[in-house]
Image 1 (cartoon, rainbow, N blue to C red):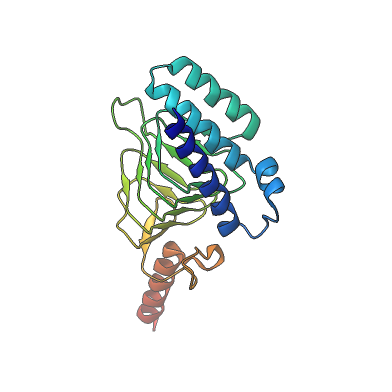
Image 2 (image 1 turned 90 degrees about the vertical axis):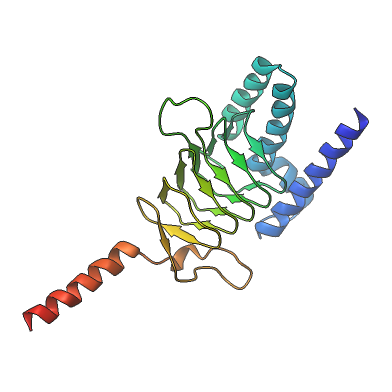
Length: 211
């Protein structure tokens, strides 16, 4: 019991440090503890997840439900989430039952890690380590998002993504051009538009044919 409590406290400390590392608006400890719904949601999830593993599933789901009401973040207690997971802003985030998330993952508001239907078994995505999910991104189905992937805001991803990739668009497409800064942070304002690039290429071909 004491070891479990000790591990829990260590994870909370890591979560707080992760907020400082990822959010320049975090000014002091009191502000982080009182005003960050992502922190509240992940702490409540860890409690609910533990109860779920102990087969106290109704109580776990009740904790998840109350957390959604308070924070606007819905995490199913059966989901598996790694260490140093940070939900920035958080409103509208949904994480499904069979989702697996690795370590050092950053999620912005309105992200959905969901299923595509009424299938049983593994029906939600697996997210690797050091992944960034931009605001409004939807990752759907039993797919694998490998390590160091950046998913742009508003993208809809329905197929596997290889490591060290940046994905944008609806449906999500892997783009080759680097869109991260020197620290590896996703530069949302500089993400390329593959559809626009294709249209520009077609316009050039049409201009050549006209000439």
